[in-house]
Amino acid sequence: MRRATYFDNNGTTALHPKVLQAMLSYLSEQQGNATSRHIFGRSARNAIDQAREQVADAVGAHPSQVIFTSGGTEADNLAITGVAQALEKGRVAISSLEHPAVSRPAEALRWQGWALDQVDCNAHGQVETSALEAILKNKVDIVSIMLANNETGVIQDIAALGDIARQHKAYMHTDAVQALGKINVDFSGLNVHAMSLSSHKINGPQGAGALIMDKRIDIQPLLYGGGQEKGLRSGSENIAAIVGFGAACQLAANEARDRQGKLAVLRERLEQGLHHLDAVIFGAGAERLPNTSFFAFEGIEGETLVMALDKQGFAVASGSACSSDNTEPSHVLLAMGIHPDIARGAIRVSFGNNNELHEVEAFLQALEGELTRLRKLTAIAV
Image (cartoon, rainbow, N blue to C red; front, side, top):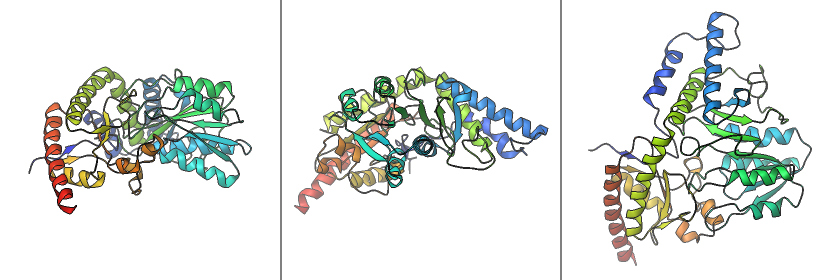
């Protein structure tokens, strides 16, 4: 049996060998606690400081703006809940496209007396500046709009949206978890107060992430304890994961142009084949991440096709891996005005650095075969 092909890199990515090498000594040798004053503790602190610089360099930030977390979900929660706790009850506005790591803490603020507004998107999955302007006519304290969507790959004009939020004196956060490593991400250029990142989306280890923050923002911690991460994220640091995150950021920054070019070639060939097979490609009219294609075929259930392709040796997703317990149609597609019957057929292919053109060709051949088989079964059932 041939080795399975992995096309679910928006879910998680493989650990890069150079990242693993950077981590090994922090996994296999005695390490000190980074708060300790002895030589082992100082060594751990130096490793964290170096990783902080690597993460900051990758996104055009200052190391002092990097708050390490356990991943993108914690970073999003800190960005939303932490700022809300430092304010009186007010209004929070999020886009209709957000990952549950943003939408659920925003919804939870309602229990504390906050009002929640939703910023709608257009049919291409884009949040227009006029839509945000309309919401901000009411006093809004917190705005969160993701930089690149984890399902469609559609990229938002966060710099323009952030400028509008600032004009209305609202705190602006963006979830950049899917964008890092696939497009240029510049914290200062995005015009936001805070930005969430994750390690395992860029060939780093799971269990590490960061919130990049404007130091002038008042924010309260989610975790209290020893006061690590400037008192905003207490708990002994996961040194190996943080070191790996830093190494992955450095690799992504150094290889950005080559990675983006290769991924774009793979997606272009895939979508040529998808058009031939009469697929509906979501967000095709907007700027998207170079590695992501979200599509469906009329009359074909997405989960059924995902399982059929899995048997053929191709790992793809029917939506976000982080919300796989939800069997309802993608909230992102529904927000774009896609009919629920089409939305239920959605599957996502997301390429990574290890994928090759011959794998795309093999996938298209397998896909065509499975579509033919499933349509015959549907015809018999009817």
